[in-house]
Length: 512
Ligand code: MSP
Image 1: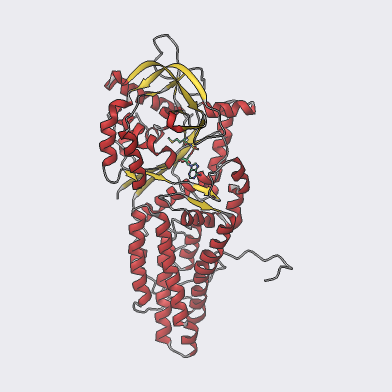
Image 2: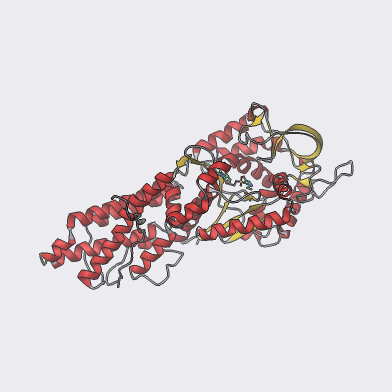
């Protein structure tokens, strides 16, 4: 069994979760579920980024302590992931004591191995609290941060501890040139261009900020500072494995970090450099997904109101929202979402195509064969299934989630076409028992495949279908992929089900 340790970014605990956060969690969850289907030993980490100026300011604005704010917000995030069916194994918070101790241990390990990787320097620059980063001239447009134009940049003059990132330029170039490390390719090219433009040392402590992990060594002036929030946050992936306690190597390194394109460079350059400086193994792969854009624009306070996350989950249920985002927004680029598009996909793909297929096949099995799947040889639908399953596996392994979802629906459409062509009700009427067995057997096998292929995209519906097919009262989480490649349906006792995706009722008085 291969180990598969997958992580997402940890979210800033300064506001409630929005569609962008949900998109990343759904995508990573789909990958985690895919690897479980393949039989991997999956560990899926999510969490909260709770220190730093941004969180401290948000707490100040509410007149509460940062800890009270982050306790509340972390609970909201966790509740939301539970509602959305995110199958995380661990929920990390950077205010947890073991994490704080782990960060200090990592810093000390770097001091011990490369004492001059850290040095003191007086520094001046424009700081964006939204990004928690100093900004270079090219990242400032009209005097504002290009990513957070509504926030005012702060001019900071501080004496800080610095990390000698410039020393790791060649290391970072080699690492990011390795195929399969920084993906998709568009992201890798961005990172390589950034490395080629030269890496500058980075300030890793903050003056006059109480909310953070104390840096273990005072400055020569005697002043104590806290750790810059990214130097505290990135190690969460490592401290979650128990680092520095013995045994952390059983899980570390991560097989995959899933993050957004805005923070890919921190994961592909700074984080590996920190690990290299500490002499620790590097993560195997970083995937920088694109942005979910409401009507083409970045999530903002107003779009959060126009497309509220909870309202979206309630509208057609968590499965439908997950399917919509992962199908509609390419996992390797940006994509737009709207209410209209959500409703269209719900009706066309889920209610009419998939839900209807499941209902009618199960109803025909009940009607013509008392629910028992007849023995019958392979048909053209099995050949279509073989092809779709192979293509889907390749696309999931390449993390092209939107394509894999489309491939599963190719099979849904093939099955609906098969029903229409074979018209089992006509076979029944004509007394063509062998033909009817063949049709129903092929359709049952196809539904088994679909029940497995939809696990990453519609986990709840997949499980309902699994049970209706007579495969078990609960759907096992692990090792189900062989049922997609070679489904065994014969003699299963199936049951009819209510529509998996009911159509919203048309209000009375509305013309249809
Ligand atoms: N706290 C940092 C991450 C530290 S990881 C060691 C952070 N937090 S965040 O809350 O701003 O973003 C969390 C994740 O959500 C990031 O990967 C970010 O790219 C992603 N998204 C935020 N808005 C997004 C969209 N509109 N669309 C898709 N994902 C985006 O950054």
